[in-house]
Image (cartoon, rainbow, N blue to C red; front, side, top):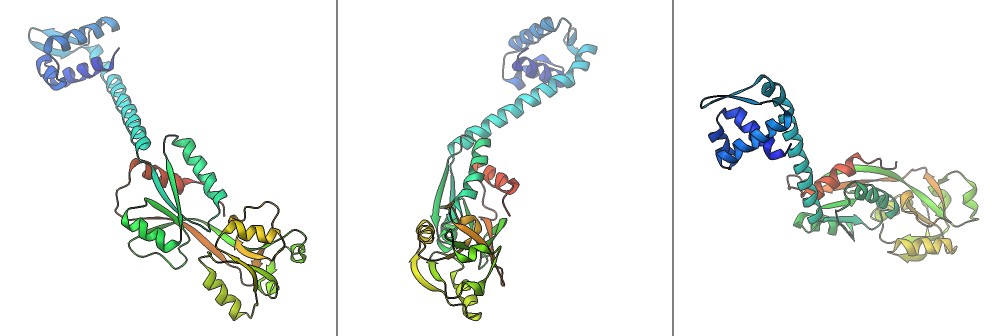
Length: 292
């Protein structure tokens, strides 16, 4: 049984006229008639009865018609899935990511996405929030994963993915490591490694000023890897989002009184049509079991 035979039978069943069915299927009438007869021979019983020029469905034809329609529907769905995957292969996802977001958690999501959509190429562009939003608005990015700490303009939509706490990052053997958590005041006077790229740096500085917490920077850097390397070298402590700590030997302690956290969100442009690959990325991101 071939799919074209099923298509011919369904067209003939709808028109009850082999000539019109052939026109609908864009084949000659003899070709359609032969294909239908071959299928009837294969099944061992007629699908149609012929009374002169009139064509009617046989009892068997009426009983098998739902099955043939279902087979055609399944074939069409298979073609649609194949077409979607071909489109996915051709259009990469251009993803902007805030540089302070921990790469390990994003990598775990990307691994899940790639296992579901093996042919999709993902390009990651790392920049500060204002630049990412500008590039997203201009169409140079498809999506962005950021911390919208100051909110996002109405021209964007932010879908929260997860929330993470800020922690004190300590070298092994540091006295504060004996505690389960530390108050922000406990950090006052400690040698400090300053994260210049932190999007919440001004807010954190203001909180420290209000609580008279004195942090003396021994080292400053915009690079998260350098900050962690300096903490591991016992240059000072740092304050970082918990999922941004990637050096295994570093110790983390939650900060309390006050507790500080941030929310990571997937930002899109409302009303902008997605490519199939981008739409798949958004669906998967919203369904993913993010930490926190």
